[in-house]
Image 1 (cartoon, rainbow, N blue to C red):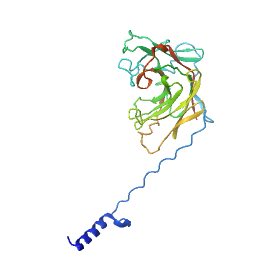
Image 2: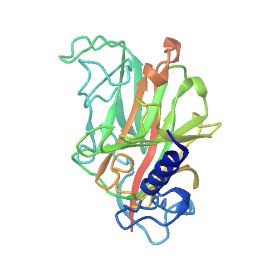
Image 3: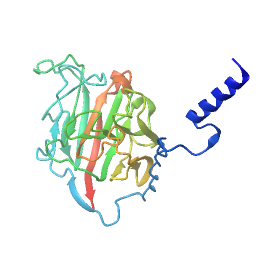
Image 4: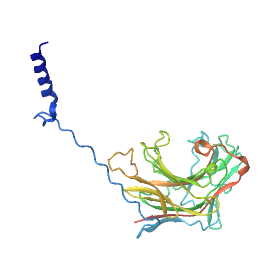
Length: 293
């Protein structure tokens, strides 16, 4: 190939590829600029937001079984086994596992087998998983649950929320409080979505230390609005999850109603080995309060 031919070929290629950084020709397609991330909102002051009013509450003032107008029980996986390989059988309307006494809700986990139950799944422990599904669900709000947690290896108490239809993880999950007995005093706040969840190892969360979580009552709190989710303890937020506002529901599904869950799980993927010497163990709840603008 002659030098003249090489020179003409180079000019032709440059014309096609817009060599030299000149302006694009009339037929070129302009690339859109990268999307600008939504600014991260400021973390709000702790405590009940100014001007917000109490919209729902259970003060646990009537002894006996929990108020059936406010609480139901989840027993759906007793026979088949629970999703995170926990070892408990969740009972329904059973005072040994969930009762109100002296102004507190008491959820108790026991070492026992309810082999006569029709949905018994060979579990060696019993507990309770209470929820407001079908009774009360909310889109946005300030949630405050005052509780004292159980301790001991294998315990896994939780205060959390799921989307109304239960379509996990598409409708999201908010863990207001999780605690595992093998790490006494370490409290977890976590968000799960289709894009960010523990099955992918991409969940978003943080931890804080509450040294006397098993010995004293503390206020476990969530503020959720269209801009962000923030989770805290005793009026101090330690975890923020901001709405990216890019329209991707896999990242931010928190635009519809969620219901509240209170439970003690045992063992499983997070709870770990269970020490049978700890039983009975219980989570006590002084109140549950939900505030709205």
